[in-house]
Amino acid sequence: MSEIKKIGIYFFSGTGFTGYVTERLSGEFNKRGISVDRIAIKKTKEGDFSGSLPLSAASGYDAIGIAYPVHSFNAPKIVMNFAGQLPISNGIDTFIIHTAGEDNRINYSSSNLLIRKLNKKGYRVFYNKLVEMPSNFIVKYDDSKAEGMIEKVKEDIPQIAQDIIGLKPLSMNGNLISNLISVLGRAEWPGAHMLGKWFYTKAGCTRCGKCADNCPNQNIEMTDRAVRFKWRCGLCMKCIYLCPVSVISIRQPFKFICFDSWYAPDLLEKNK
Image (cartoon, rainbow, N blue to C red; front, side):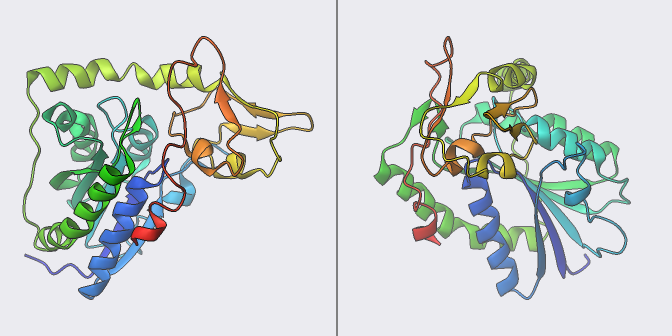
């Protein structure tokens, strides 16, 4: 078994929870003398991932990781597209971290399609772990539960890091029902494009540009007259969580869907 000295972690995080997990994980690797590159998955204005793909022979990674939040029982479409643009590998050890509001078997199949795509490209996926983080869609957890989940992550990360360094195999096996739900959940991918078009900024927008500058799908455009939402939304809610005046909303008939920044802005910061 070869020694791991350098790791590349590619992560997608809309509301910040998955990013927090990868940040803690990177810190644990660093404590063990391992160099880590932590790279956000996001598209360039040209629509590709050239800014997120330093993976080459020159990068010298002994292992790579891909981290994402579960979206509708799947990896987000942007993560799948990213995996599709990864170069062919000669068997590099690969781990997957996915976050969800509940460690339930219904979420275990979210990596199925991603793992198949990585395997076809020659990546050896040896570790696939679900990490509980506060729900930020449909169901809101109270502050005490959210903070308790983050504390649990802080306790678990050292062991997760050790298992990855030791190349300890871990798989999360779904069942027939979770596999079927995962397949049906992929309807979110085109659905997200449609829903995203219905977002708008209410009165009070300061036109600071944070939403447009930080949209991983390059879906938001600042014009002379308005903030324009286009047809490439992935429903990650990054714009909503970054908006300093909380003016991003969705029009009827979709207002019943809870798109909101539920948690205090310093929730993750104070738990670092």
